[in-house]
Length: 484
Image (cartoon, rainbow, N blue to C red; front, side, top):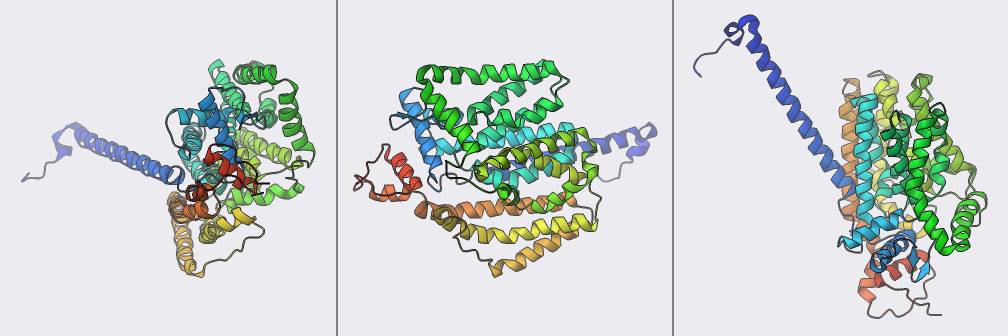
């Protein structure tokens, strides 16, 4: 302790000295990785689990699907989806099974529908990062998961108990495995996930799987293994419910909610062909500016990038050709798009004017978050076209400061830190939205607060709004009769 010890002179060739340096570097790397994992876990908690029940169930679909899952748990009939004593064949059973299992586990009426979806989303994101790191390297994987995990579309559908996220997560995992299906085990894994996607939303995943069929056309054994495993997983439910209900199920499920939904405007969701272009920009918010990187031919020299591009492009064309269009349909296309963007960002030259501008533009878009937070209750009540949008001037200086810092970080070669900073601001914004806006949604949009306050006096309902009626029925635990 009193004299400096010369480790270089204490061992031949200074080997002890270099060993100590190596051990120190290894220890620092381990601690750094643990710190990164901890930060990642905290970010995922606030993005996906924090305040899930601060608002009641929203819209017509969420309370309706939750009611079907609760009925399964109560009756023990896990085959026929039922709503208030009648069979309900609009969707297959995967989401209902998840909700029923959560009710069986003792979760309450608000957490049971939403927690399984959030868990599935986070589980997929973890697999997404691991698979991409193995395939493309750590930097591309980091950029890809940062984009997907903090994109508005993936976040929004991870907070509500509807079928879009379960189908998208299972289908995306199946596609990522299928492309590299070199063994029987990988083919079976991809097939199981594809079968789960079919149990989540019907035949749509099979149509979206066509790019994988093309890329695997010379590996027929892998394709046969995938479809065989998918059939083993999905066919039993379809066979049993068809046996039990015959043409009633076939007509409602396949004819009305597949063929008619795709080819006619009978379900009142008819939209123009270009509908998904603004939806795509909104779903990828605030990373939308990086879409400009996808116009570089250099990105598609890699066959893996060609597969991802085919996955995205075919899905976009398929959904755009449909007469009925809803924003959630685009969700299974966000994972390949996030990977393409992650690869493009990882390959982009450091400190170029283009990449600096794109990072700065994504940071600048965060200025819109407080306005979107204020807009959300109005939009859910009256529709986005009728909601009033006001940019709060008080947030312009913090937004400008963030733009300057992110641009400076990119110019000094610290792109990882710039992307991380934008992601952390999104995490804080989501936490703020949950704390401030969810209670407002609970009061104005969800029927939960109204039911709690008036449940003793409600004997019938004259409300024509489907979302309100389904919500009241769910919280009442019964179908409230019409006052008329």
